[in-house]
Amino acid sequence: MQRYFIPETNITDNQVTIEGEDVKHISRVMRMTTGDHIICCSEEGRSALCRITQIESEFVLAVPEQWLDEKKKLPVHVTIVQGMPKGDKLETVIQKGTELGADTFLPFKAERSVVKWDQQKSSKKLQRLKKIAKEAAEQSHRTTIPSIEEPYSITSLIERSKSYEHKLIAYEEEAKAGESAALVQTLHEANVNDRFMIVFGPEGGLSDKEVGLLKEAGFTSCGLGPRILRTETAAMYVLAAISYHFELN
Amino acid sequence: MQRYFIPETNITDNQVTIEGEDVKHISRVMRMTTGDHIICCSEEGRSALCRITQIESEFVLAVPEQWLDEKKKLPVHVTIVQGMPKGDKLETVIQKGTELGADTFLPFKAERSVVKWDQQKSSKKLQRLKKIAKEAAEQSHRTTIPSIEEPYSITSLIERSKSYEHKLIAYEEEAKAGESAALVQTLHEANVNDRFMIVFGPEGGLSDKEVGLLKEAGFTSCGLGPRILRTETAAMYVLAAISYHFELN
Image (cartoon, rainbow over all chains, first blue to last red; front, side):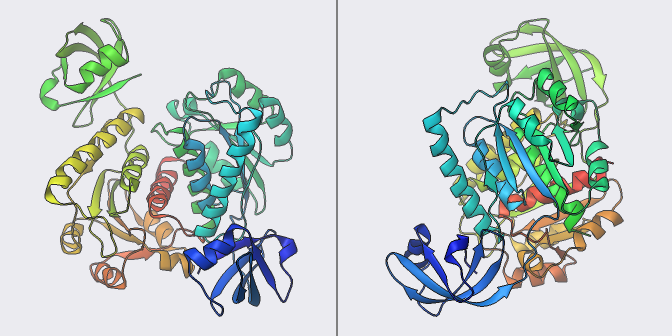
């Protein structure tokens, strides 16, 4: 069933008001009419089966018929720190990473990131990335949209990492050296609701300096198997491994 | 280090002859000269550190200096059966699936596959897909290139599946129903060198009829966590889970 993310302020126990782009999606794309059902998700992660009661050009009204107890979230919080890659790879990471359950994406201005966002570009880019995350969240039946933040420097990243229980670096050199225990060990030690921050380099990888600073700040570097993964594949590998570890059994 | 896949017939103990597109890659793209080193992989999966001894416009000669004992292969054989998806998604599955260790890709003419390949298109498409697999194998430091075959019908697929020890269907409806044990159980029961065939539907999913026929043929359907994955993400999830299960510890 089609699902829509609705701002908290537009949801009461008796009525949901849908505005903006979703109105067109409901009336024009999905060609729904009153009486049809949708799932509405609040920003806080509640979701309800709703019946559409009114469709206007500027808004759609729906009545919550049943609040749902959906367990769609990964049992741990995962923040993907992605060294800013070329082309549309960041979009791929965010689309697939949303499907695979990531909570937060932090673009990271790595030494070897070729791409730079100026002030103007940054807000447009972020807007586009947030739209991709919202669509992927709807498509994958999540009840929450992951947050995407402005690009981080190494300093602000390390400051931010202080509130995380588990800090990992997906480091190509560790894969080459055959490291194969750190990810498994970290997942085995983790508890439900723990927070993970995982750093992925851009195409050229992280610099020795960056790895040094992150390790000083308590990060552990881990290998992801013997094959060398593209930067956007590495994030998917880790998220799938986390889901396999915690959600399948 | 740059690696190239070389036909078995062009490799002797004392000399490797590189022909075709790789010649241009070595001389023009990488701007290598005699004395530079590359890794040459044979079709059978042997690899050697080689020193370039001669660069001509039509061929490059190199001397194997050291045969390498590289363990880049997944310890089990994985055949990805991909219900033919729209657009360039099959290319994504093959590129990422190669990085993640798949052995074989079988495009599958599923009931809900919108895309059809005619005879002429088929050979061009396959050529392009094989090139993507070769490049992804080189980039991910594999010692073998996965094979990609002509599209299969459900009947030929079931016939082919008889030689596999483990047969799985990644089935959206199982994910929705909360199935979470089949993949883990299958991996726990598997032995090194076992053969897995895993079927993924196209965008619209597999039909009930297809799932029925596959189950009759010994396939087990498995869920991949509570979120609904796009078809191309599902294959990556399973391959990452297999690598996590067998290669990390």
